[in-house]
Structures are given as structure tokens and as C-alpha cells.
Length: 401
Figure 1 (cartoon, rainbow, N blue to C red):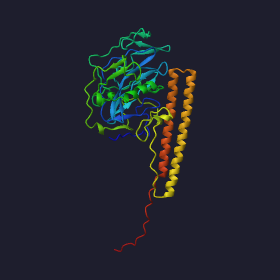
Figure 2 (cartoon, rainbow, N blue to C red):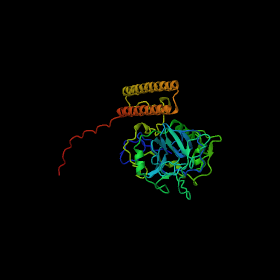
Figure 3 (spheres, rainbow, N blue to C red):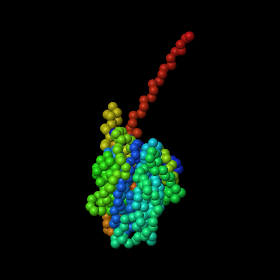
Figure 4 (cartoon, helix red, strand yellow):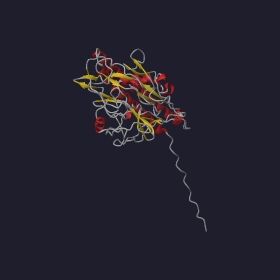
């Protein structure tokens, strides 16, 4: 199937539902994700780790959902909470809204991920004087390892637990953002940490985590630490949240970055324009690279063939010049980032400092990648043949009647 992914050209920010100031790529799929699987939460591995629940992500290459196991992650900064990602029905498709770190937990579609994320806010713990304290009533904590704990009973309806993984649409969760959610949407946000990206990529590369292979029951549903899918601390899935059978025409499902206005019940409005550096490139791939060396080598355009040898030679020289210039810019940025890595190593930087630098590197690289794409498109537009002018019509003698 051909995947149809369209880049954002602009966003009407007051009417769209966005989550983060730098915004993520929004992918939409024509059929719903599986239900959330049933599993036990692994024990917290140490102080100040935050639980990030598992979720279904979409792989546009294989046109399939895959499970990203829940895991414990160190927050990028003390005082930050994780707002989980979710799927929401919008514009006739299921749209993915990525998670983020912020000083408050925002709207995540009313999805009941469990373990403190019961659809609204987070009841699993709180920050106090730079350290995280865990609510043992809803969080798996070994007090011999983690001593910052408390007990607060959380009242919730356990008679019927809804394991639906999307908001709105047919059979989805019916929830709207509260005033508190709208305030959280205006907070400063930080994207998922490098360890979370590593966890996601490891799951994506394992075919057993694909919904078409596991029918909604992935082999591992959660881990104590990111991307560690084996061993005693990897929690196996007990059962699928509901029967799952991908549509027969799954190969014809659309996956795209949609410019449709999401339904208002999916995201609170936010006065932040999505950053262009997270848009997909012209090949429909998400710009998820962190360093210039990570940028995949794009295919060189076909040699110019205008029918005029002199013009073809001129256009080829322009393309070669642009390619050389862009290679030099990538190498220069790569060297600069490597120097910053060396400085971090000399200073024995902590994990939070490393994550901040990696986030800066990711933004720099994506901005460079987008600028290069725009330069290539501009050159192609300049070289495109101009439409021929219509021939002049000679004056015809008037007919006599």
C-alpha cells in the first residue's frame, strides 16, 4: 500500500488541538488501535523514576500498530510529570497525539492506562522538595529500594474497566479536556526523553510487538527500564484487552499527517504553532533524527533532461553545488555536537543534562534537515519547465452574413 502522509503547511492554532509548543507529527489511521493489554506493573527500580504507561504506536512502513511497553523513566527535570500519548477520533481518522513532560499532567483522552493514570491527571505520586514520592495504593514500589512513599486511597469504578485505547469515534472513550487540562496545555513542555525513544524504537524493531502478529497481546507489556524486554523485570502480557482482528483491507488503510482540524474533544486549544522541524519530509518519513549522521541518505534526483544539453549541464552543476554545500553543513553541525558530547563527558554530566543536550541536538538537526529539504524543493521549482505561452491568433476576416 502506498502510505499517504501530508506535511502540515499551516495550523489555525486557536481551533486545532495541540499539545506541545514544539508539537509533534500527527499521524492518522483509518482503523482503530487495539485495546490496552492486561499486565502487572514492574516494581519501580529506584528513586525519582516516573511511570510511563504502554501504548499502541503506528509504523507507517509496515502499516501496522505496535505495542510500546510501559516503563519507568527518570524525568528530564525534577518537578516534571508525564502526560501519556493517546489516539483520538478526528476528521474521519484516528489521530495520534504524542506524550510530553511538563509541570502538570495534561489531557490524555480520558484513557484509563492504570497505575495512577485513570483517565484524568495522575494519582501515582507527587514531587516534594526535588524528590518524587510514590502512592503505594496504585504503584508497585519495593520499600526496601524506594523509601519515599505514602498511601492515599484512590476511589475508582473497578466494576467495569474500560480498556479502550482511543478517544471519540465508534466505541471510544467520551472525555473532554477540563479547565485544568487547558491550563496544562499552556505549560512549558519537553518531548519524550532519549530513553523513551530508545524504548519505542526497540519495540518497533521487534515484529512480535506488532498487532497483526500478536492480535492485541504483545509478549511483553511493561519493563522496569526502557528497552529491556527480557529477564525477571519484564512483565508479560496476561491477556489482550479485547479481541482484535485487523481489517482485511489493512493494506489500503491511510496513514498520514493530516491537516484536518481535530475534534474539539480531543485536545485543549493551545496558542502554540507546531514547529516545522517535526513535520514529515517529502518522502513521508518522520523527522525523528537526533544528529546529522542519523539523517538517511536521500535519493539523488534524476539527471536533468530538458532536451537542451547546455541547460542540463547548468542544472546539474546547480544540484552538485547544493549537495556539496549541504554535506559541509551537516559535517559542521555533527562536529559541533560531538564536541558538546565530549564536554559533557569531561564534566561528568548527569542524565538530565545529557537529555537536555540531546533535545537541543535533535532540534538543531531537524531544523537543518527541514532547511535542506526546502532548498532542494526551491531548486526544483526554479528548474521546472515553464508553461509555453499560447500562440498568438491572427485576426480572422469577419464573415459576411
